[in-house]
Length: 187
Image (cartoon, helix red, strand yellow):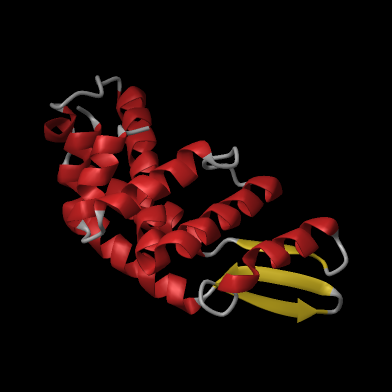
């Protein structure tokens, strides 16, 4: 994972105050376990951490939350890509990558991770302990950050359209600055 100084540098470039960046870094890296796992339990933790980021820091917290996860994934993906190609993951890596590969990498990060996270849903029976806990935990943020649907005794929790628009802002920022972010991540 990138150093927090790198996370904060890019968080501030996105226009977010240093104290918000720091708080979200702590929520993500020291909060509930599970950074980027697609299991049901990890998606629950992902929602809880997003909620906490919003509760403490508002919409800037949500932006910082998705930017932090994206930067962590960029580092993982770029280093995995370099390994697969048999190249060292160093500052010269970017020069080795062709334009086609660069477009593929940016597209992968944007569409297969960032947009995937905003599409996360949690579904469960209304009377399940996990759903009751989560609804209680997210109560203040429902309508702003989360949407809740009830269908045939099931509860479906997902991110709201407000989050979708916020994620789009982060996606544009990341896409615009992608290779500069990669350079910092590889330091």
